[in-house]
Length: 359
Image (cartoon, rainbow, N blue to C red; front, top):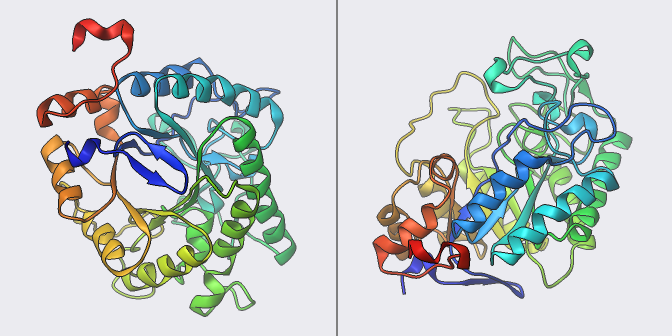
């Protein structure tokens, strides 16, 4: 059997293959009103297509734990029961296709309240469904973004509680995996990095202080998430800064801390917290960061970043650089990438009965 199509067991959850869908915002939810943040027909069709295409695990887009945690007013959320019920339709269908439904819980921090990318992606104010962003420090992401409001310690505790409440709803909605979003310059990443965290209290300064909020969120989620189901954490392994930022060494150290706090897999990405940096993109450009975490820590690891070919994905697993690959753009281009890859590698993947003629 191809390594790409071997099942993987995390805690007591069996994921049927190692082809996973990374979270990708669709900017397609209602921005206001009783259905704000709830998945719609677009989201159902989007995820359902990748499930029928053989994807082993699907992680929803960054799903905000509070209204002000949305990256844009058009993002998904899980802060109320209306959203919970809307997600059930998706998880129910994914499960019938043999795909494991997972959810990424997020808070946008200082990069929240922005417009949809095809509208320019600029920050928006109250006249366009926006709000004042929150952050660990009153430091803007770049010259386009407003200076955010610095969170008080009481507000930090409230956000932590919001993550736990969203995890409870995710479980009730039928999700089997929960991922805490600590990457790409959003709130948790902002606390981790000295580039964006200028606090002088218990949540800033030293490594131990800057990682405190992230570990408190993980602890709160792990407490409400069943012991037999895995918790993931997505990290930006580097800010791509020469100095003054989060580093790969920090990531390895933090991965060990996350393991001690009950995280089962580190979803390793990079960047997003510092504007104007130079990133040497290319096929598999983030895989070495995942490989280092896998080699130096007890955590299972997911690799991301311009993984497009079946042979490329297979090699990452065979070489022991990661335990699974997460595809983004390639699954947008080809919802049935897993089925195509299985054919190329001489493996098998579940095909819906209705599509038997395509086998």
